[in-house]
Length: 72
Image (spheres, rainbow, N blue to C red):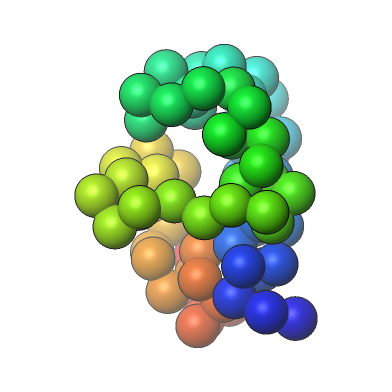
């Protein structure tokens, strides 16, 4: 699996685990719901500026989101 695919899968899993709609994450990151959908499908990545925001929001490391570690 590529980094983009792992990122997409883990983003989707984390959001669903928390029961949040894509709208909540979109508002947090200042992007459209469509961009969140594309991230979760693996057709788009996030920016370096937004990565730490996602990590703090879900209480996971960037290494976990990027597939460099299996430890959250």
